[in-house]
Length: 356
Image 1 (cartoon, rainbow, N blue to C red):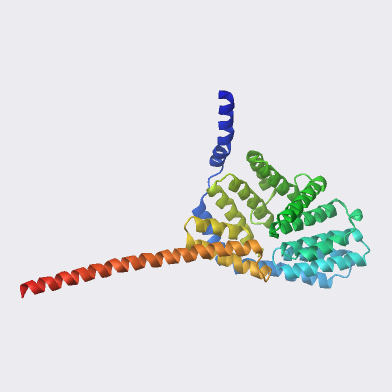
Image 2: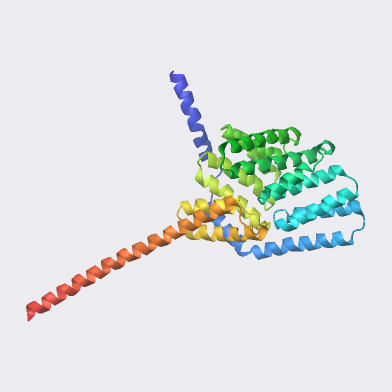
């Protein structure tokens, strides 16, 4: 019994010990870098816009259809985290080119990419319509990854948005089935494989394994890239499960920083970071980050999605509470000062009356 108790104790403490012995988190320095990046955001946007203009010019000049389809896909990738409507347009251009080339395999892959983009902007009906138009039998391995991944995403979003418990369980069950399908066809070590494996390990509470896999993932990506931001975000989710707030904020902030520097408008990390900063009491910074992230997301898509609205509202509520608390403190202080002044006046009048 003693051995069982000690083993249980060690297993229970392991995540906490592991979380404390990981890399140090200099949050003040990280937040300074985020502040600088926000102020330099127009410069990063200009860089992306130049890349888009260059790519668009190449598309207009190119006559070879095989080459045009790859340039159109490049444009889709540039717009994918930046402007949703333009990303949708170039996904449709890719589909049209693939149909002209009589390549149903490519058309199916691009429809899957279009479906995921729709799903990511709460356009679930459009996403399902595109996926149902895909001929799965002609897809190669990469096409199958995109296809299953899009189905997995749309069912996860539908499950999160419904208020009907039975329907939610059904959608999440389908999401799990498509997650298994992605893992069967994705290359081990690819971005799709890594983020799903981290999810699964966290669900099983195998946090040490999840962090070790995250280490491998971070070695594959480069700083100041959207891929690096994605890897950092998933590491923050592991630390969130471990209740390690400093490391959660650090990796969430690292993810946000990379995305700002890449002019990514589909911001999630900065919003989630703003929530946590507000909970820690730095309301002014949290409000500034939430406002910037809100503006970015509205530039990406003209309507905030559910999780974005919730995050913004929480920060605004914290800001309102802080303002109310300050107003209450000022009112209390003013009341005390007034009371003291009245007492002083009464005392002065009393002294004057006694002299007379």
